[in-house]
Amino acid sequence: MTADRMLSPEEARTTILRHIKVLGPERLSLFDADGRVLAVDILAHRDNPPYDNSAMDGYAVRHSDVVQANASAPVALTVIEDIPAGKVPEKQVGPSQASRIMTGAPVPAGADTIVPVEDTRGEGSNIEVLEVEDVGEHIRFAGEDMRAGRPVLTAGTQCGPGELAVLAAVQQSFVSVFRRPRIAILSTGDELVEIEETPGEGQVVNSNTSALAAFCHAHGAEPIMLPIAKDDQTAIRATIESALMADFVVSSGGVSVGKYDFVKKVLDDLGAETIFWRVAMKPGKPLVFCTVDGLPYFGLPGNPVSSMMSFLQFVRPAIRKASGYPETDWPLPEAQAKIEHPADNDGGRRQYMRATLSYRDGHLFARTAKSQGSHMISSMIGANGFVVLEPNQQAATGDVVSVQIVGPIF
Ligand code: AMP
Ligand code: MG
Image 1 (cartoon, rainbow, N blue to C red):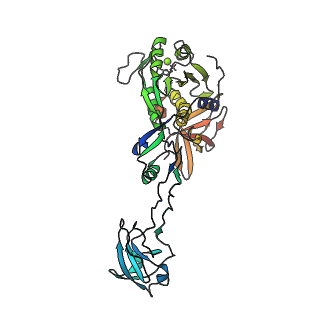
Image 2 (cartoon, rainbow, N blue to C red):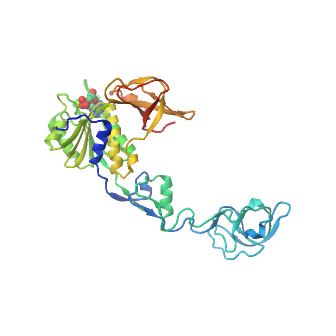
Image 3 (cartoon, rainbow, N blue to C red):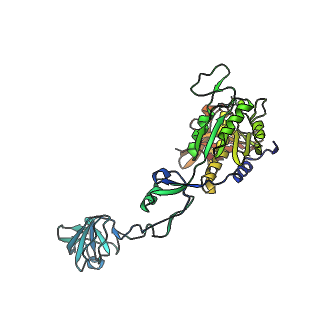
């Protein structure tokens, strides 16, 4: 281990990101592309709307015929055709004529305005127009939404329901999106048992693998959950070697200075290039970042909250970069919030405090969890944000502090 300096969280993140490559594209069916990032620009193959069409059920008219119409002096028109949606108009609208038209149907030649049925009287082939708005009113013009040949979505856009609607409209039944990183997750510790095992004396249940796998899902990666590795070099080495088929490896535990913290040693033996192994933050000071044959390896601390915190600060940005998100989307989103109680960071490292963020009266508020111990798994329940306090920062009730947003805010 050579890289001895303790990095700031920003330095650590930028350093990690320098080692992360954007993964290649894969083609997915439209529906499977939900939540994924486009790898190519998408052009509209035809105009949308594809033709001028009516925005209302009503009558297609010549504006000049009815411009004077009002309730006391209605204008009579002869209806020459019915145009339901899906029908191609056959007749041209001439002077004092109208075509009955439904929403979405093509506007017939000769007509330049739609009069909604509510602004008319009568039915059959004789109707009266009671009022009219401007010329062109209630017509949806060809190409006003999307223009044939022009880009409608650009590479780097995350697909959600709205983007899928656009992709469907331009008939992209398969789309090219960035691959999601496959992340091998392994927990180390002699004391750990799997969740279905009965813990004996001195044993604790492995909660990190589940938490880290869920974070992978939430932030756009595919977790591969490996079995627990005992605190012995052979076991850790075998498990790490089995993990090297992934895009990244994330382990928890065994990276501190304890006598049985073997992860760094095993990585050295595997010829890993250690980039750094400490970050000036709390929780989460020990964090090994290295590359094993070019493969990024994150050795997170074992304490449950520390491992989750380090994942969100460092693995999430790596996932986002690898899967094609724009740079602004790599770190957790940040905001300013009023803190609801005094809080201070009397240590020398930046502190990330689990918090509940809420909106009230147009303001964002933050309330930190009572216990910030890094073993307090339950303090993560409902934590939709972190309050970020710099070394020696003191915040009084109502002070504005920086927060990171982790989940939906209600
Ligand atoms: P370590 O980083 O290996 O020294 O572990 C620090 C603390 O985190 C110890 O109390 C461990 O028992 C606990 N711990 C480590 N790994 C896990 C895990 N996978 N699930 C729950 N607790 C863990
Ligand atoms: Mg351990």
